[in-house]
Length: 357
Image: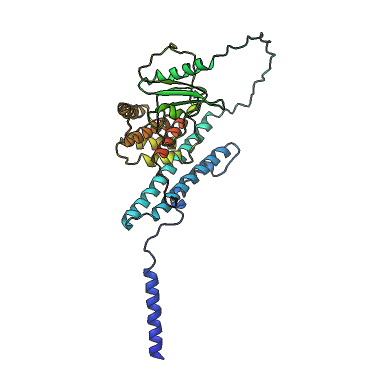
């Protein structure tokens, strides 16, 4: 019985040792939220009032988005084929980067709350405004309707004068929309080109073809080639608009831009610095924006010099520099446009597994 008891004890000890050795000594936590946003909630929002409810809701949503994105990246890292020391270093970098981003977001909110408290007017006296009847306006003559062909030529010349070295095309679709395209880089419109109101642009995607093929099915069109004469004269009436560059907003615009500019080959270090500051809305010095703009203009000139050929790495850097410059000056619509193009052109090609012959 004593021998049997000793053997059973040895077997249990052996099984316990094998079980312990089968568990990794270090494993990524399933949820890194406490490490990213724990303890960051500002005391100014400890008690939420009707005046601060909107700010608190925006901050809570942004912090949770930062934590969720970090969790997604940590989850993807667990399946990566990396040695333990490299995986741990990357995990620490992801958490540190997300934490710093969250701290900047909270600091921006605190400054916003303090600024609002200083500017708040406590004077209870409210002037009484008496509405006076407006005089009847005289009947206006019917507006002049511009012919469609002349309108297309005017809009086309508006952009072609800004970049006469590119091919441009514009056309009216059957649904009544007007599409403007160039064949520079899959249909991307570079920064610095003011766009006329009332046109649409191609959605971010890889595409190829002649300028007319990019335009697609239209009921009428106009095309400009480098060297074509301008016949409309300088246009002072066409209003520029930011609306053509508007795209569905990316959920993690700031985070995506910060990660994309981190130690990217060919980008100046200031790009990552200003991407973080612009994404966190902490404010950027004008002199730093001027330095970044020099890098952005230089990259764009290099891209234009290759036209009609395109170097994909240079194009990606142009997109990131344009997005960083836009977010640094609080132009989130343009930043979203350039980042959406960066993601579309750098996305992996669709898998061909499972396709049938």
